[in-house]
Length: 198
Image (cartoon, rainbow, N blue to C red; front, top):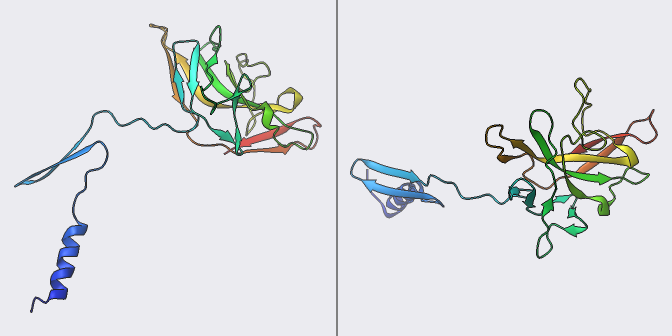
């Protein structure tokens, strides 16, 4: 078989396509026996929407995120303001298992449309109870987020766990992207709906 210029070009392109390229946090070392790929032990932080960063047991910094394209607030200050607001609470609200939540609370108008000014972050023991207190054992839970009084609802963005031995509070992220809210009224109940977030 004759090695033409065109064939040689295709062979070079095939070899180039198989080359290993080092990305962020990856190092390559070529040896006579092959290529060694080394990844950094600590992956880079992913600063996604609604990422919760705890500051002790009574404060949290939250990366800006949106619900149906609308900004979320802490004490009437948007998360993307400069300087960003900090969510603070005097005493951590937890259930009997040492679990609590940081949740988005919102209200709807009489057509079940989101009222943007009501989008706020709260720290609660249970995001599905009327006042955020722990749920009673055996309380049923419907699909979607439950309706609360005044056409309100909540959706958790992070679960907080307090370790029993050390009392250290750890955040477990639930939401990693902007959210969309949709309410489906319950026909037989005038002021109730099932709320869905995606």
